[in-house]
Image: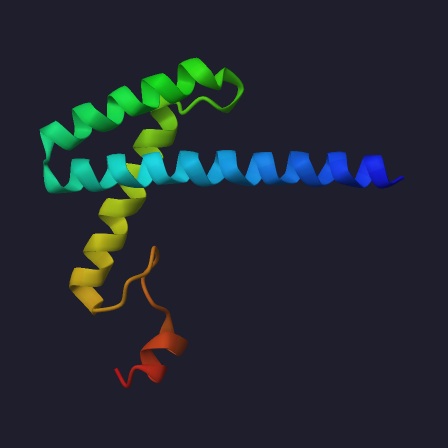
Length: 100
């Protein structure tokens, strides 16, 4: 039983690390795109290609990058419009809390 728990824990840690790393690459790419930083885009693309070669079962796909960029653009637009950093427009409850 102890071996099973240790194995399950190792798998959980590996998955968590993989998803955190993928998220970090996607965040870097989205930031580079929104700031128009072609050097950072190229550097991140190289890092993503290396990641995909090393971990094909956790590959970062073009659709993942597109989704991350779209989310970043939306969040930045909402922050600029409302002063609230969020991925969706604040609803009436949040507006009431903010006194708007």
